[in-house]
Length: 400
Image (cartoon, rainbow, N blue to C red):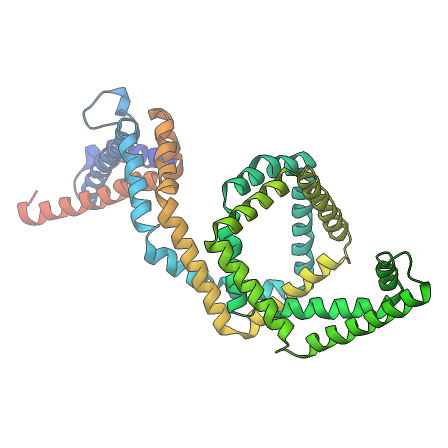
């Protein structure tokens, strides 16, 4: 483009030289147009060149603007982007119009894409689990969790928990489950129950007496547990509720009970098996997860695959859910831009600031060079046209 612009200037100069001796008649129009074209070409060449360097190397004032003012240019671009591209209206409108939820639903409708998501997630989780060693877990428990548990009073937490459970009857399902399991165990383990009681029987008692007593106790225990299990208002349940309520109150307000709870906590935390149990639990959990994640048909992958498919199907038919997700995406995008938008925009200023003046001029000129050369070309053509018009007006009004 630069060569083409220079070629037009040279063409205008050649035409001007060839037509100068014959500037009467129509040749005068050509000569005037060529003269004005040269003036327009040179003027626009000066203007374009002055943006990036000194024309002909001459230190003319107000030239080489980009190298001298690259810092201001970077700050201006940074402010322009921050004000016009990272505004709340623009960000929310762009995210809302993107239809993110609809795109997700359409993409997840393909089972291959679901399998891909599951496989990638399984690999990421497996890699993450592999990076966590037993030493990391042991250090976390011994250096972070246990000291924190020691500092935190246990009694108020337990007291509030027990009080809330009793007030909202949250302990009832646990009690029902315990009674059911204890009744089932007694029903299916009469021999073991008898052996436990026989160990406590007097040595002088004959075996037939011990057996009769244990059988009777077993029968009565089953009947008693069944009564408690089947009667929500049984006095034993009421007594247990009262006991829990009193325990919650004492943990909150009784100094002796609180002291015993804290002493129990300290004994528990001092036990060497606490850290070892945590590591063992982590090892078992990690082995189970890794084995399931490694199996393409494992329970974890199958469950995630099922949930993703169900989620995609619901997205497809539930416009309210799509609107909710799109609104959440819009809020999230604006939160990120509002919190970190200044940092994003500052990349422009920081990048330009790292360039030296010549490098900045070269990069910008290469990016917009074609348009700048069009300015020179247009200047040549428009200048020539204006020259022809001026020559014609001169003849019309001045007579020469």
